[in-house]
Structure formats: C-alpha cells, structure tokens
Amino acid sequence: QVQLQESGPGLVKPSQTLSLTCTVSGGSISSGSYYWSWIRQPAGKGLEWIGRIYTSGSTNYNPSLKSRVTISVDTSKNQFSLKLSSVTAADTAVYYCARGKIAAPGPYYFDYWGQGTLVTVSS
Amino acid sequence: DIVMTQTPLSLSVTPGQPASISCKSSQSLLHSDGKTYLYWYLQKPGQSPQLLIYEVSSRFSGVPDRFSGSGSGTDFTLKISRVEAEDVGVYYCMQGIHLPPTFGGGTKVEIK
Image (cartoon, rainbow over all chains, first blue to last red; front, side, top):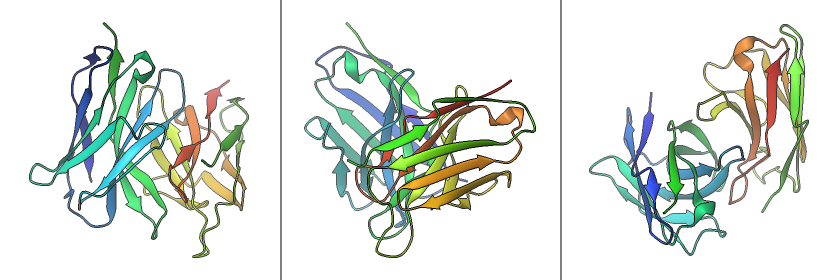
C-alpha cells in the first residue's frame, strides 16, 4: 500500500518561502495513473487544494495561489515538493500531500494522503 | 470554482442509530462520460482525511458496508446505517470533476 510522508520546516518567517517535500513509498511516483498533489487545512477550517504535478512535470495550481506556488517532482528520489513564496500568517496550516487518482480524462480524486505537517508563519 | 455546501454542520448520534449528511454542489457533477465525480472523506480526530466513497456510491477498499452514498447531479447524501464509536470525526464531500477540486465545509459527527 502506498504511503506518503511530508517533511520540512515547521516554522517560516513572514515574506519568506515555505518549502515542503513529500516522500512516496510502496509505489512508484512515475506511475502514469496519478497526479501528486498538495492540500492544506488551516486550524479548525476546511480543506484547500493547492496544486498538483504529473510525472512528466506538468502542473496545475489553484488560481488563488498560482502566483506564489511551485510544485516539482524528483522521480529518482520518489519525491515531490511544494514551494510557497511570500508567506503571511494566513498561510499557517497543516499541509498534506496526497496521491490523486485519475478517474477519467479530467476528473481526479485523492485516494491516499500523508499524515500532514503543521507549518506556522511567524517572526 | 464549484461551491460544495454540506448540512448539517454537526450531528450527535446514539451508537447503533443511523446518520445522514447532505451535500449540494453549485454545478452538476455529471461528466460527459456518464459518471458523477462526487467523493466522501472522513477526517478522524488528529488524522488526515481518508477516502470513504468515490463516484457517489462506490465504497473504497476496506470501508464498512454501513457507509453508503447516493445522489445525482447536484444533490448527494452520505448515510451511515448504524453509527459506531469509530465513526466520529468530520465528514467532507468533494467534487473532482473540475479544477480546482473543492470540498464542502464539513459535518462533525459525534457520539451521544
């Protein structure tokens, strides 16, 4: 069974760049049936999709964050990464990586999630 | 973006009793391929969300058959036939037909 694990700093200063990595085990990130995704959840709030990357490197981002987000993939390490620039306190959240299963050309959903990592933006 | 609206916000259920959660989308989730891309997740306390139901009514691997999903177009329902203590948490519906995928605000289920 596939497992995902987020890693990265738990504290980031305002205006700096948040960087997280997701390590995938139990399956190859190069499998063609999946998008590799990032989702976040502010404390006590709902879930917000950040973006996704295909094994080819093709990306899609949430328009609300697009100007600040970069998602990349390293197939040799079976990892994918998130960078969010110019962070503010509003970016404080639990960040999840997830495997997005392609249900059809277009639609997709998340079948496995990492445990999540709390990132706090504070000076 | 497609807006997903869940009701109720919270539910307190006696063990062994049924529970029902409603989810409405601002646009139809029916795809041109004939399938409807509506999903249900459960986030247990302190855990990440876990997939319960995909494409309206199909149970994900390992999900007990007391969970069932139904609906079409823009109106959907998740039912738990007999609530157990392990079912506590926040339930989310999600649409996967259009980017960005969007989630409902969540329904918190607790045990009386």
